[in-house]
Amino acid sequence: MAGNWKMYKTPAQTKDFFAAFLPLVAEAKHCEIAICPPFVNIAAAVDAAKGSRVGIGAQNLYWKNEGAFTGEISGPMIKASGAEWVIIGHSERRQFFGETDATVLERTKAALAAGLKPIVCVGEMLAEREANQTDVVLTTQFNGGIASLSTDEFAQIVIAYEPVWAIGTGKVATPDMAADAHRTIRGLVNAKYGADAASKVRILYGGSVKPDNVKGLMAQPEIDGALVGGASLEAGSFASIVSF
Ligand code: PEP
Image (cartoon, rainbow, N blue to C red):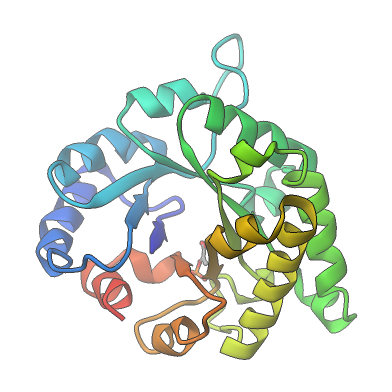
């Protein structure tokens, strides 16, 4: 269960969140929990989460280790700040910051080289779903952004299926729709990396997951977890999602 805080919260608000959140998930041992705050809050989050089961992640990284790349943050820097996870290829980065399948692949390889666990996002836009292109889009994103990983590299990633039309809109995919897309992705994994990898890979659903719809989604055997934006910002609501 991963929370994507997007561009929200200050270090002080991060500290307050963890003070409220950690007691609520102290007994939640059925899943891994990650919170991905903005870069500037990673240190505060790592400090606040120390001794708990909550891992901290970044929301992006650049694929060079260091250099004259003003404004960028590298995998080794994120790792050194105490984070374990990194979200890669979120649709907001694809839509607003020029992320492509090729750069998703570069970032994923760089994250793995730095010892981070990538959460690689894929998902179709509304027009693509309406044109029955969901499987085509997922196939293109998988082939361009994931399928060049080695078998060992692939074994270390988590995939997030996030239909773009469901992100931040309050329009959640039905459990059946999400499960269909997860089956497509698992089929792609099976074809490229084999049945064992397909059964082991964790595929999260993301897109308006809330305390009142998480149970139905998680009842689908295809859905291994959730990547949660808006509802991860409030300790009580994210704790309810974690403890679905
Ligand atoms: C996200 O940011 O990955 C996301 C799924 O957002 P929301 O839960 O707000 O739709």
